[in-house]
Length: 165
Image 1 (cartoon, rainbow, N blue to C red):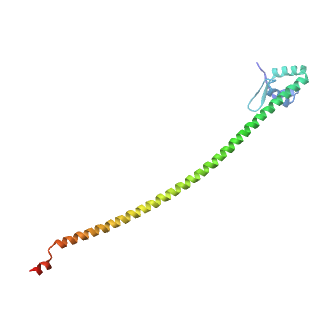
Image 2: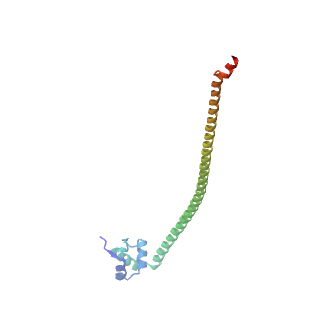
Image 3: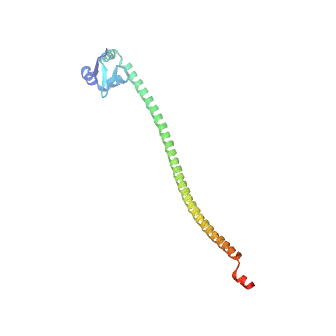
């Protein structure tokens, strides 16, 4: 069962640098875990690594570190590629948003013009209806007048009757 110790305790107890412990944890040379705020280390794993490190040639250790650096450099290159692709995607989306805003403005303007046209047509239609209604009223009055004249013309005229007598 692992005996976990804090990074601070490991630094003091084994007289190693914090950077080295973090590097060993990152390269999985020792068993370590992150809690909410700190790195904790399996003490037995650290002891085995330190014993191995004493017998391990410096040249091999440097080679291992060099491989780690190369791997990190490749990861950085990949991140740069991803960032560049995201940048291009963002630029494309920004252009799309600008085009959509222009289209929206044009649609809003077209809508306003159509509303004005509808209002004008409504006013024209109302005026036409009023005019037609007025003309119909005049025609009705004229028809009524004509009908009244016809009635009076059909009634025997007293003057005409008297003159005949």
